[in-house]
Length: 198
Image (cartoon, rainbow, N blue to C red):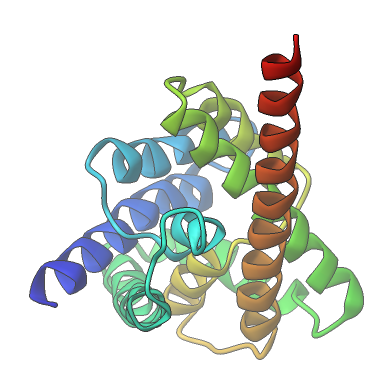
């Protein structure tokens, strides 16, 4: 349990560093540097909710552990955001502008769903031996305006604010990842059957 919590807190910190760069530098450099966060999470095998939830059934992850990962990511992520707020007040305006633009809407949920799709595929590709899914996938979801729940909670910390849209981001990320996981596994099964027949 302590190890699970430590790895979840460390993951939030790494995503926080990427988000800091995004708020500080903006487009087009920020989204590219943000990829550093997920690369670090994957290389160090840390616990990031958006990188784990799609593998809930593939890796036989316990639901209890996933809930703990999410809780630690959210709590520590918000605290990291508050820390960044004190460290560099110049990013507060960018964070506040972002939070003010978030709406509790169907559109926001769909953007969260699509982020979940990209996150699952990025981590899946990394597990297959290439970091390209992360290098291209992270800037992709940011440029498209898709919503990542852990990055969002860090932004909320920087803004010292709260938005109920965070619940949509969590649900959207989860469902997007899980649906993509199901489709991917089914495709892999079909491919293996086809190869065997040949």
